[in-house]
Length: 114
Image 1 (cartoon, one colour):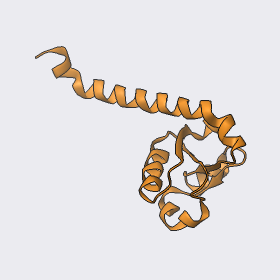
Image 2: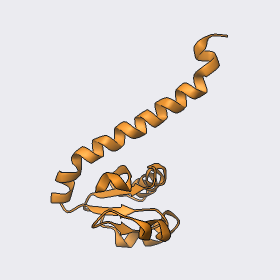
Image 3: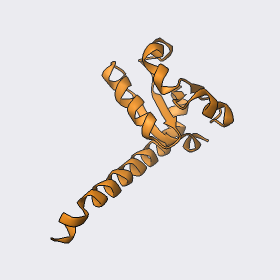
Image 4: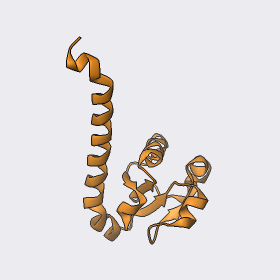
């Protein structure tokens, strides 16, 4: 069995994490411009996680509540999402895109917004 055949799950996982990291870094570079344009910053962690630490100016809409709180988010402005690792905010991004939000960005961890 060849190297790739033997280790493809590990390679795929490493590539996925690498893409997630790279994608979040692209959003972080855009943050100054997004702030100037009036983007809304949404932390999708639980309320307890948000209270324990959060990025200034961000609002908390926990991921399980996002579907029922869409009216709180403007569709005509950029929405920047964050969470603890970037996974929940990735799910939130897919949800918002499916609901017609065109300008959605996953910044990864909430610390990236500080």
